[in-house]
Length: 278
Image (cartoon, rainbow, N blue to C red; front, side):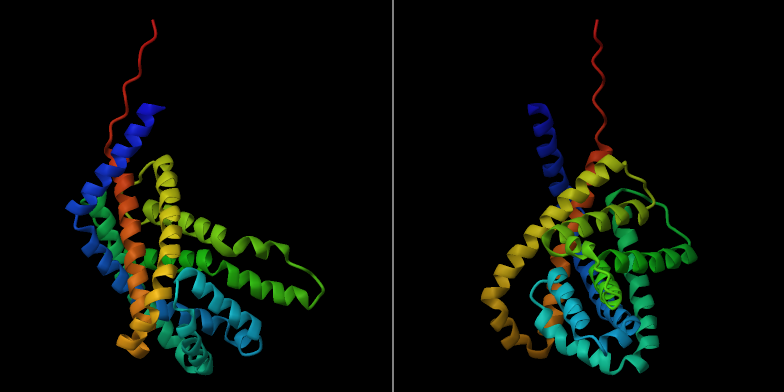
C-alpha cells in the first residue's frame, strides 16, 4: 500500500516536471484560443438547431443559459444577450455559424493532435482528410456530451405534452454531471486524437483526476469571479464574456495537458518484475 502511494506521488511529480519541460502552459494558451474561436460557432449551431423551440419556449432558453453557467463559470449573464441576438438572427446565421465552426474546430483539432503527440512522444502525422473527419467527429461527441442536459430538457418538454414524465433529467444536472461529462470527454480525446493508444486503466484514472481537478477549478473560479467580476467588466466592458471564457478555457486546457502528462508518465513507467514464489 505504501509503495503504491509512493509510486502514485512519483508519477504526479514526474508529470509536473514534464509539464514544465514541454512548455505546456504555452500549448494550453493555443488550445484555449482555438477553443474560444469554436465556442461561439458551436453555440450558434446549437441555437440554430433548436431555433424554433427557443422562439417558443423560454424554459428551454433558460436551460441553455444554465448549461453555460455550469460549463463556463461566471459568464452566464453575459451570454444571455448574445444568445437572444442569435435567436433573433437564426434564419440567416446558421450556414455562417456552421462554416466558422468547421474551420475553427479543424484548427483546434490540429493543435490538440500535435500537442498530444508531443506529450506522448509520437512522431507520426495523420493525413489531412483523416484529420478533417476526426474534427467533425470531435464536434459531434463534444456536443453530445455537454449538450445532453439541453437535449433531454427539450425531449422532456415534448413528452410532457403527452403527459409523459422524463425522470432521468435530474441525473444530468449539477456537479456530478459536470464531473462525469469531463471525465468521459477526457477519455475520448486521449484515446482518439493522438496516434498512440494508451492503456485504458491509465486513461480512466487520469480522466477521474481531470474531472476532479476541473470541478475544483470551477469552484475556485466562481469564488475568484465573485470578488473580481466588476473589475473585469470595468476594464474589458462588452468583451468581458470573451475574456472570461478564454481565461477559463486556458485553465481547463492546462489541467487537461497535465493529466495527459500523467498518462504519458504512466505509459513510460516499466512494470515491476513479478516476484517468484518458491
